[in-house]
Amino acid sequence: MKSEIETKAKTSYPKDKIRVVLLEGVHARGAAMFRGEGFHVESLSGAPDEAKLLKLASECHVLGVRSKSLVPRKVLEASPRLLAIGCFCIGTDQVDLGEARDRGVPVFNAPFSNTRSVAELTIAEVIALSRQMFPKSTQMHAGQWDKSATGAHEVRGRTIGIVGYGHIGSQVSVLAEAMGMRVIYYDIVPKLPLGNARAVRSLAELLRESDFVTLHVPANESTSGLMGSRQFKLMKPGAFLINNARGSVVHVPALVAALKDGTVAGAAVDVFPHEPASKGEKFESPLCGLPNVILTPHIGGSTEEAQETIAMDVAEKLIKFVNVGTTTGAVNVPEVELPPQHVDLMGMNERDGDLGTGDGKSLETPRKHRILHFHRNVPGVLRQVHARIAGLGANVSAEYLRTNEQVGYMVLDVDPTNARKVVEEIRQVPETVRVRVLW
Ligand code: NAI
Image 1: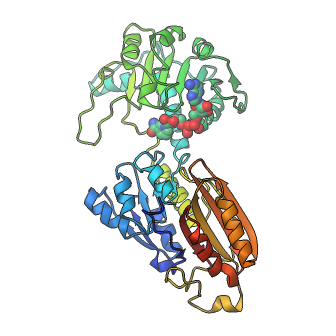
Image 2: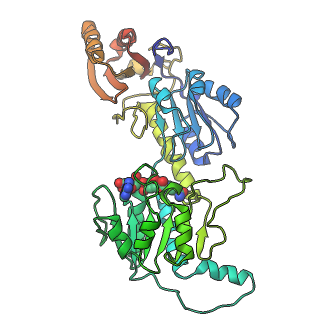
């Protein structure tokens, strides 16, 4: 690893020299936050092709992407200045997380920022299904007036069964209860019930009791095909299914059969096993054309509020990492929450390894220097680091460390007089991946 990676110390830059590149139309609030910190920001609306991305990434310190910009090893190799990557979305698959980790580049995302949006869509669908809103609307568009109440119900007093009582599931729980619904849920992990919600012991129990079954589980081996013909048969007659989780969770041909033979009264589906990659691509599914089936193009989390919250969430994590060294919320490196350091990045000297200040102010008010050290997590690294620091007689006022299987992240607050020597010593440790200094 060391042969590929330059391990010399990266010192703090003047803030306006920190270049942030945001791709794919990240909400303007993100750029505003970076600008508020004094960083230089470039925002692009689309996803660049690989050559353009290589160039942009190689010239920036912070890269912000959404789901369409791939950041493979090749891009990371070409981007030695890159300090961190922000995925302004939920998923992080578009980034080679292992490679970024091995280079000491934390990757941040926004796992909960669209939770409320998905929960609200789910509630809207509960009522829409119960009132046959979509078939009635379709009839009206065709000039038909059918005012009949047959089969239309209030949701008050009805039971909603939530499969997966995580962030979204528990929000649905709160909203559904506020509408007077009875809430039950099934989760493989014990979860604190909110309000009057009640946990059930099995999926089968949930299916037998629920008027609405709503899925909020992740896509994984345990949830693949979770809802198939056997499960549909267990559902209460007249019950509805809502899938705003992932396409793989429902066996679509079985759902189509259950809808056609009336086992399931209706469905709302936002996610599909095969989803068009872009706007122009045709959507095809055996669910198309079935009555009382609401189809939406994976918009559960797509609201302007969610986009803004995502931008704020990820920008804040990136700013905290650049300014303070905090890695809380990183998906690929150990998470270390750091107290604010008496760090003043203004007027800093850009020269690598130079611990002098640019404005002379810190000479009047000496601050601790913070050394951020990513290293390969193999036995003996800490011993080496401690021995080297002890050899210098350096005054370390605080030390923070977290490791995962592959890398360790160590942060040292040291007296300014020792900082340069400590960095030089740490650089000599062969397992060092990256060193950065804040002061
Ligand atoms: P979460 O991780 O907070 O909650 C998932 C819950 O499912 C956890 O409590 C977990 O223990 C439970 N679970 C896992 N496997 C299970 C199983 N086999 N049976 C029962 N429970 C199980 O995730 P969050 O944020 O609530 O999101 C849920 C899913 O919603 C995401 O994984 C994603 O696939 C989907 N989603 C869809 C969006 C859309 O636009 N339609 C937007 C955002 C998320």
